[in-house]
Structures are given as structure tokens and as C-alpha cells.
Amino acid sequence: MRLVMFFIFFYLAGCGIGLNLPKHDSRFNSILNQFQQDAAFFGKNADTSKISVAFGNPRKEYELLGVIKLTKDLGNVDAICLMVPKDSNEIGKTFYRSMYGRHAGDRIIIVDQSFQRKTAEEIEILVYHELGHCALNLPHKEDQVIMSSVSNGTVLGIYRYFYLREMFLNNKNYPLFIYPLEAKDLDDNDNLELVYQVDYYSFGKRLKNELYFDHNKEKFLFLDDVVESSL
Image 1 (cartoon, rainbow, N blue to C red):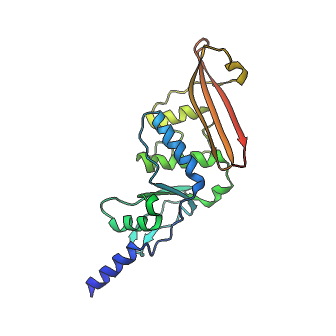
Image 2: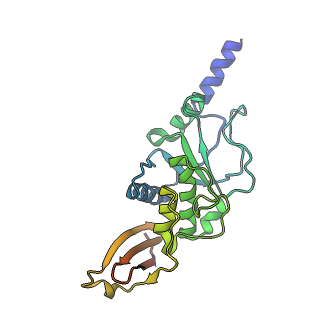
Image 3: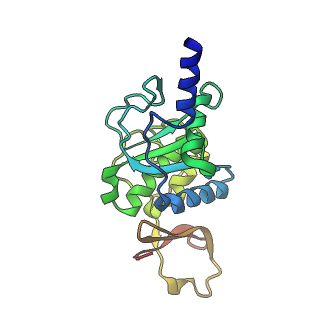
């Protein structure tokens, strides 16, 4: 009888019964791709192709058939990286394969539903934080901006390059000021070196950021363009 019950349990688990997780939201694809590109820019390998992201309830305790706990109560959090162990919990892996098909992975980020009313920049930095856990296995670091466990409303903004460098390389050197730069100043200016640039669409906004260094004046300059879009 126990053997029969075991096979029934394993069958139900393999069919993905007993755990209701939100499915991957394709609106997060651009953030996943950009994170992978940013990681590569700083020499890090962060494969996001096996990570799913969705809006849901990150404070819920997710269990498989009411027996196998996949999360624990983390308190008042805005998002969570749900990780299914690769070796010790094959039943959990079977669930993910059946739930997410060829896009299945061992990890899913669940973002609180309230963030659907947030800006693209606020969503981005929250997902980047969770990707630090999910893709790079980074712990919380209270002396960093992105990986801090406490969110103070900061977005990447004009310090994007430096926040990312801090996250990926643990380099905490910041310039005291970043000066504005107009597009016309780029013409025939050999003193300017492009340090970093990003240009992608996320949740209806175009996030465009370019950082330059002026070798003559020895200062960083910032060319920014965040434009509303229907894409």
C-alpha cells in the first residue's frame, strides 16, 4: 500500500499538481536579456534563459502537494527568487519541466502584483536584484545599492554603470558628480570616450543611457533619454 501511495505521489508531482505558480510573463524578457548583456559587459556569465519572471505573491509559502516546501515565510518582501534544488529535489524539477516546458529552469522570480503600477525603472532594479540571487547566486550586501536587502526607491539612473560595476565586480568607486552632456557636444570631440551605453524597451518605456569620460577635463558625462513608448 505504501508503495502504491509513493507512486501516486510521484505521478502527481511529476504532473505538476499541487503547486500553483504564476507562468512566465514575456514582458520581463527585455530585462532578462539586458541583464545578461550587462553581466557580459563586466565579464560575468549570467545565463537568464532558464529563469522565469512573473507577477504574483512573493510572500506566499509554496509547497508541492502540501509536503515539500519550496519557499519559507520571508516577511514583507517585494519579490523572491524561487530556487528548486537540482540534486535533492528531483520531484520539484519534474514539476518545473511539466509547468514551463522547454523554457523550464530551476528558478523563477515572483514580483509583487503591486509593481505593475510602478515605473519601468523601479521594476528593472527590483528584477536586477533578484537576478543577482537567481543568476549569480549573490547574497545580500548592505553596502551595495542593487544587492541591498532594503529598497529605498533608488533606480539605476545616471549612476547605472557604477551600480552595475559595484554589483558585478564589487567595485565601490563612484564619481562625486556626473555632468550632463548634450548630443551636439559629441560631434568632433576626440576627448570623449564612450564608457557604457544601454538602449532597450521595458514596460512601455525606452530606457536609453550613455556614459562618457572626458579625458581632457577628467570627468564623467551623462547623456540620457527616457522616452514614453507604445512598444
